[in-house]
Length: 124
Length: 110
Image (cartoon, rainbow over all chains, first blue to last red; front, side, top):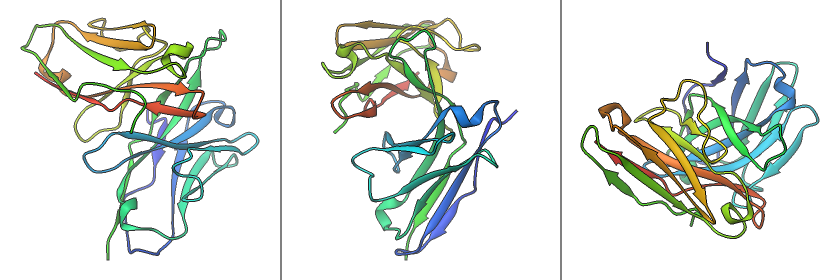
């Protein structure tokens, strides 16, 4: 069973806008933070930011604030990542992931369910 | 630029034991935030391997084990198998950055 499903690969030109999606099929979707993680070609994982669907609270990494917009829609159990003006340097694989935590109060914050990734290619 | 440092690569023969280190600092691992590990097989999404320093999610073989001491952590793979060839990442939270941070990643070759 696929619990987190992302939208398909995209090919865009510099300056174009784009919105990719991440649908959660697990229970209590709105009460888990959903994070977005970038992986540039041949590189490591970078946390971009995350959204809490229940109240649309959003946190951004300093590196990505102002560069992307994160949102969620509880009526469809879907989170989104969007750009208003893509650059070639945005070419990467983007993963969404559910952030879980330790219910016993320990400072454990980890990503336990991942989407399959959305490859975004920006090229003229 | 990551605040968590891992060796770029480790290798071992089938059946051997390898360990991957993750070195952080006083605002992340050393501050008591849990360390979590992910396995990324070629061309696939990361998969949670260890959470809360040394806990394995259901389905992860007990060949994988985690540990933490001060501002560092490590994951060990015992009885190395060909299917363990992958990239491995540690992850924690950094209170100074207010951000979730990943390690630089380690490629394991069998």
